[in-house]
Length: 477
Image: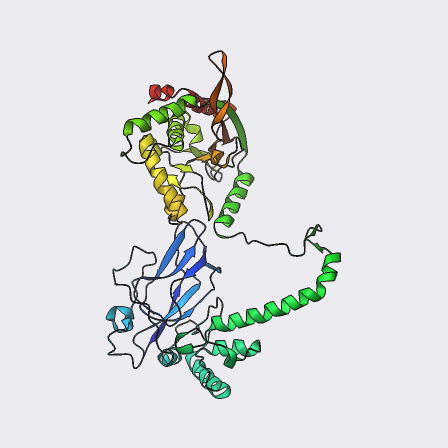
């Protein structure tokens, strides 16, 4: 006899309280092994594959793809132990002694090393037996995604399945929830083609039929109401007339985290910005010389961003006020001994800020290699939450977007951010004569609580001097 265990969304660390389901890696009826990844979720910081600590048959999933769940909410239920009639097959991972318990692990890479089971479905008759005869341990036994489903005792499930089978006839449906949902929406199950094993009708099949019916009804209603809508524009909550078909985009995931952090920064930090134009011709020449000296087979080239990052670490050593944070409760400025340098990276998931740890101990080549590594992880969505937190100062190269200047918003709870515009040829007075030079605009936004304009101006001027004359940096190392 199988025991149904409920697996809840685990605490993914770094203070995260919810995650969005991006992609299910298993279906209802699949056999899973201990620590096998079952779902891919997106937090406010990274994409994470979540492994299940139980081995057995998946009997229910909770939440459609795109649903946001809080930590501790049910993810899925697993029937642990071999269903009746499946022993001796040699294939059912539920017969493994380890499958009767869980590893207790929640993140990929921290498993027990149990081999991943082949994705396999239990026949509908066996799944029916496993679901209807297993004692329910605090979780609804349903096959379709439901976030907050009513809790049903096992004997009631048996009766519902039996009554549904008698009243509805030989329809390939296991879950009583599917039958009830179909009745509520007047869906004839005999007209549906099941997508489950052996034609089993799943919750997704009924949901698809419901959406089709609703879309048809909505389209008909829009055609009937089109003349009225064209004459009477809808009003937004603030009373401003807007388009009838305005799109609403939820602020969640990375976009929601960015919105919350920027809003908090603007609310809590009294920021100010200063900027200066600098002649970057010599810096570009030094970069070209460094890359030429290493040769074509020496690995990645040193980037301009890496050189600017190295300049920032030297500037923070001279002006440590900007490598700090403010403890508002204690009313204290906390100066940090190490520099963990964040850099803004634009990805398909949105803006993220990976962090180069201990940047003050690295040279330009080491910083450049770490920036390249973290950038690749950001583009593939594989950055961990730890790689996106703990920064003490941020470097933002918005010049890659073809703009000259900006007023950066401080990455809370840091105290400053340096913005870098595009480097481009401009007229410039060089050694008393007008010449065409490579010019860049540098912007520093700083928390006015940690320092005054003199310190911020001194920091920015030092950075500009190093950009114009890289030898200045060598004199201070």
